[in-house]
Length: 223
Image (cartoon, rainbow, N blue to C red):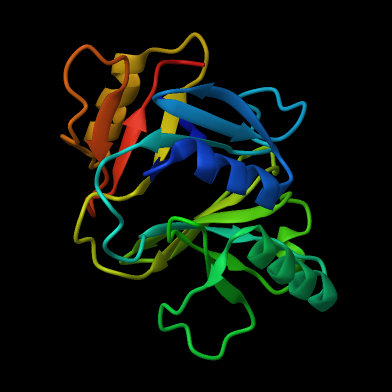
């Protein structure tokens, strides 16, 4: 039972404010805006097209305390474009961030709530991803995934920081339309996921799981 990546969910103290930053950063649009969720997606986007990954900002009371284990890498097409994007993002409210990266060809910034992200040097592999080159997750081993259609951002697992607290950014996956939610959850549990409790309570339509390294993710209803 296959699932696909449909959202990247970001915990936020001020979801609407953070959504506006990312809409400007990616040159996307703020879509639906509710008290418990603000969506950011490309103009004209047909959800859940794998050509892009919608961002969903949700309110949480907890402040950010450690480096995120999930972050975005942004694509650029030339050294001049990279430099211009960094300046533009700083003008929007990003700040330089030091996560021990040392002397590297990419630039590490943080959004207005401290979420780290990278503005990459130009790389041919990301020439057709759109503004988001990859969603990057810290883990023990490294591997890269992409939609079988060959579109949209990559999902990259790279060796990184140890998990200490609930991830502030997590993935939402969903079965395809017409498939079975319970069967998808069962398949993920058999693959090594475990049930997770993040305060979701009862009566929700999604199931919260954690991957073998404890990274939380949600299995949504088919779409």
